[in-house]
Length: 198
Length: 198
Image 1 (cartoon, rainbow over the protein chains, first blue to last red):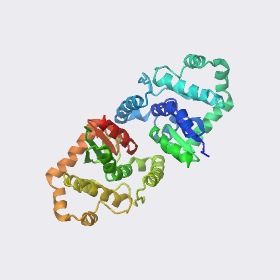
Image 2: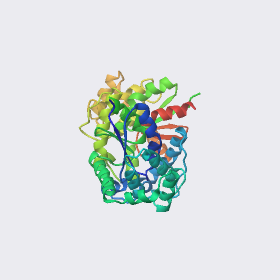
Image 3: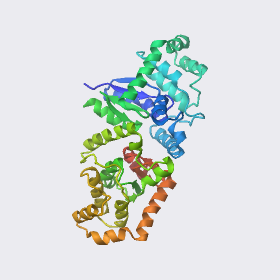
Image 4: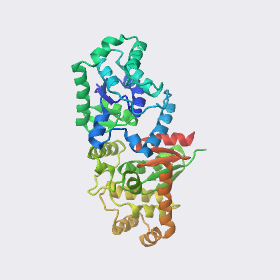
């Protein structure tokens, strides 16, 4: 019986995009239950590195590599890709919506739609009109979900995800966690799936 | 006709160990010519990050993950592993010897022996008696090779590798480079081999 795989991601994170677009299909293929765990990566960067920006901006050599690598990875996995005109985008509103969609059969679709908006369509996912339009495109009534997304229990859920990420030793994104075992980086999805099936 | 794969590594780097022990067999299987390119990673850390230590020591959260991950990776690939009592070890002397062995059919063996000494046997590869013993274990006369390793052209070769790494946008290790295309991280070896065969 495969163990569930917890996918810790941030909508601002480029490598999370690659993982997010592939993960539901890969988990289904391996018969591994998937749990979406949006968290606030910026909080960890701020605590651990004392920065309020992406390390890819703070360290331009790493940034240069990442942008080229993303292009290459998206070509490899046949994912749409457009380098966003703003990076990193504020992702807390989108993350709260993903938390508010927990338990819904369309949660995975919402996650992929928000990621594609940021990294394939260059849309400003920090802005409520954009999020409203994206929910409409998914066939969901935006108003009740937007209201739910700022309810105390949903805010608390996102905080709890970030707290758990911190406790697990997370320092970047994406991460795959199986029974407390942390795998960091989109290129480790296969390892995490193998771990889940052991 | 596959293009050559240039393997940029540092004997002090844990993830380089995992790559180094696998790379010759993987390249042979893919019929990709392999070129060993030892370089001085510490010089790039110093320039780019202003640190004179490993980022895994400077950022303990990353370090904790790396040590656990190495254990896991070595189990996965059935590589011997013993967490070294000193990290990172000074690797310039070992790197010069690897440069001095360029063109020798036993260069790959030397590279693996030095890496195993550091990460499986916890031997101090910065010390000449250890290097001498390792060369003897390889069946090589140590004295002429140690002399060659400090010759100006060998020092220059190591400097040239580091300069090329810098120019390629390297910021860590290991790296796989195919026709100027940089792949960073041991988990990207398969991607680099695929690129070499395109």
